[in-house]
Length: 152
Image (cartoon, rainbow, N blue to C red; front, side, top):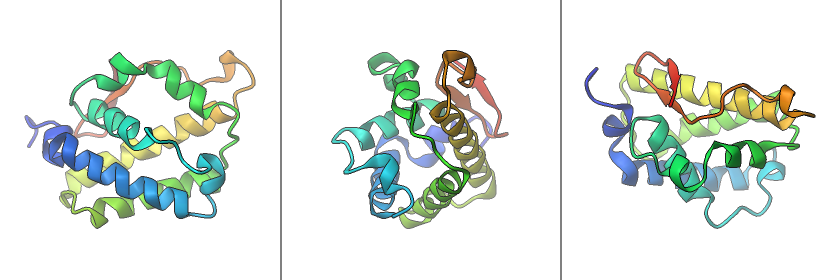
């Protein structure tokens, strides 16, 4: 398993698209999170899929087609609360089960740490009044089986 990427273990782009599609539908239906997402955006599932795939060791399409600055921009001024951040994590982890993602502990632990980290970054960036207040990460993090992230 250590030689297999999280992307491969998850089942690749198609499996991650199913995950993000299910998750996004849940977010749009959730009264606590709906204010952050509004009515939704047509390409959001696709962009989430690209981001997760790249983070998990798959193709770098998110970086090539959108770039990390896009991620910063979409979170700025949302004023994400800790309650909303925790709910996001909860729905994401539930979506793993709903779409039949691998259930082994190393995978689930890596995904949890990835989502926890990402939601912390998003929450910080959502409250940033200036660029100096932003989280310092400026590239899609590459997640490992140990739950560590490395930039680029």
